[in-house]
Length: 150
Image (cartoon, rainbow, N blue to C red):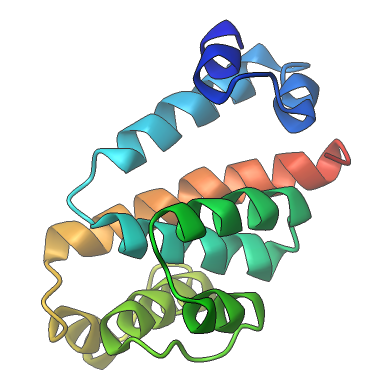
């Protein structure tokens, strides 16, 4: 928690509430740091995070990652589309969003043609697994945040 507070300039209430389970909090912080190091570009990573956060109704995650998207220079059309769960104006990022939803919809048993559609946008098999990592990381976060009423 101290590292998080130093990095963010204070301890977000959601982090404090998750600290009830140090194992969950540490696991999330380690996984999210590892996800930040994946080969997915920052906007693709945030597309995964926002897709999960909006789908799971985690308002604190949506708020935090909307701010991050803005810091990354994402345009309002992209942010609005993510909030509204509609196709994104950027075809490459839409491929990420669609693939993430396919992974969730099929519990990982994504149809071959949907995998190929993701890969056709310049992504790799490694990126596909990194999307799964992001889904897992932020599913844990969003469900825990909702459970503790963050």
